Length: 526
Image 1 (cartoon, rainbow, N blue to C red):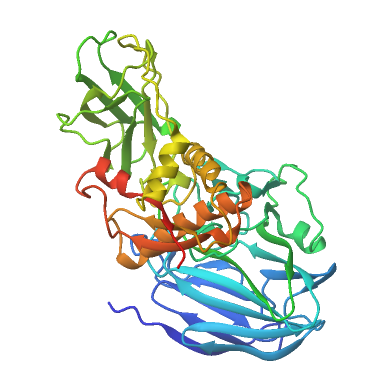
Image 2 (image 1 turned 90 degrees about the vertical axis):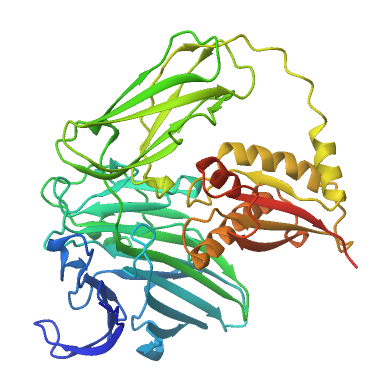
């Protein structure tokens, strides 16, 4: 069936308004509407998730008159709601090539609300709303502007639907700031048998600016405290859920004639949900290892009480060990279905990279769906294995000199390895960037010398998505070097190579991991 995008204008009659016009966009998966009088938005499923029978035509953001999902604008301490009578409309909600666009003016600012349907990060289907606010300063003076996007969740016929983050239920008022903000959150209409599954995405290549604060609370708390609210960590009242999420972008200075864009995403959730306790893992190998490679067996048993679809079992080894080329089992293996009380068994051959410490721990990771780092549940099994004593390590060459000489020779310096489908900087990557920053500080500024930052991916996924992911990785490295290490922004240029120029084959997990990288290269001025 073709996926037709429909743009319509609907007349709604209710007890609250004799006539209210709604501008909408829809496809086979979701429907998004904007209330013309207030510019507030609402959302529902159409077909929803094709794999789920009972999620058709379900509300996921309430369509009350007016809708209860609102956006708060803070201009130099003046607090108002987008679309209110505090401002005036340049034009009300209209469609423009499949996007619902509204222009509203207040205190010298033109604030454009843009709603569009984009591919969901976990479903990879066009079932997600990207809501953006593009703010242009025409006041003639700098303005400090904040934006708070409040999403009033309502799944099907349920208003009390608490959220989860990385498999953990948010059962009390909770606040995240800065780097603690998760990449996404999700919510289900029923934890035991979910029909409607929704996620909010906070960090994504389509989101140019990450939020400063995110609060999970109840809707009345947010509506009564439109801006000045801090989470009090109080438990949600039983039986009185009215859950909502507020996404804050705080105190951004916008100079005259400049623009700033703030966005978030909300749509269908496409990953399996279960906890680490639903799986029992058992590792078997010799207690004393004298020869390499050595055999190891992993058994994963489903004790969740329900059949599990598409789980990914990923083997993570300590420093000094690696998966042998003789191993018939890959480090990352998919299991399409795992029945109740059934087990999946994996047999590995483990080899030595370099001499390791006497006592080692084998960390066995169980990854939900294996498609998004932020929803990975790690189940760690401590398996004491005695290995040969470590030899004294050879003296390493001066790292800074190696970096500098490599750059000066016009060669690439590589930073790897990023997680699957992720631009998140791991502690190991940050350590590499700390070392690189010491070298980059020696490069003279203003001499026409630039450092090119190029982001790359493996070959999994479409070329378009991989180009976006490559740029997101380059941008994450750039942000760390300029914001954390305080290097000048003018020193760097960014590009995305996507899946091009692989450094290893994409037909094996190890090779794909090597291709998930960022590279530096010195560009000399004319």
